[in-house]
Amino acid sequence: MSEVLLRAMEERDLDLVAEEERQLFTEPWSRRLYEEERIRAQDRCYLVAEMDGEVVGWAGLGFGAGEGHVMTLATLSTFQRRGIGRLLLAGLVEAARALECSKVILEVAVSNSAAQALYRIAGFAPVGVRRNYYERSGEDALVMILTLSEENA
Ligand SMILES: CC(C)(COP(=O)(O)OP(=O)(O)OC[C@H]1O[C@@H](n2cnc3c(N)ncnc32)[C@H](O)[C@@H]1OP(=O)(O)O)[C@@H](O)C(=O)NCCC(=O)NCCS
Image (cartoon, rainbow, N blue to C red; front, side, top):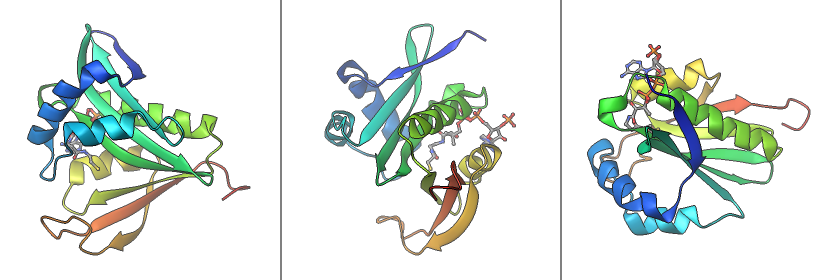
């Protein structure tokens, strides 16, 4: 497989991200929301994974008060199960460490066993459930946490 590189999400990525988002998520974010998120350098870090010059996945971290929050994570369907999600998640965790976050939190749909498996492999542990978390479906979300630094947690 060609090398996969991570870089910051840029304005030129947004058309593809917004289009693929509609294929990958039942409650997709709009292009405008991605643009608003992407430019919040003070509390957001958005990455894309690139292979042979093409975007094959993306992920976003929110941060503040010593905590990181996985905002989104996706791999284009034709590139899944090649380690790209794992790489993107590692990129977010690395960013959280560099920002001195003591933990990283995320919500994942209770039915999304693929993403849950990925998060468990990366060391995230389930800590609770948020009821009716997803607006459209009303589905519950599993809350998972990765502890980075016990001293500051
Ligand atoms: C979840 C998602 C990001 C995983 O991306 P990916 O690039 O396929 O993940 P990886 O190839 O890095 O997988 C790493 C590990 O996670 C687990 N995993 C990933 N997809 C899986 C699946 N469909 N079923 C079971 N386990 C899975 C496996 O253990 C896998 O390791 P393996 O392939 O060596 O067995 C991808 O399926 C996706 O974009 N889904 C739609 C959007 C989404 O649900 N995002 C998460 C929102 S919380």
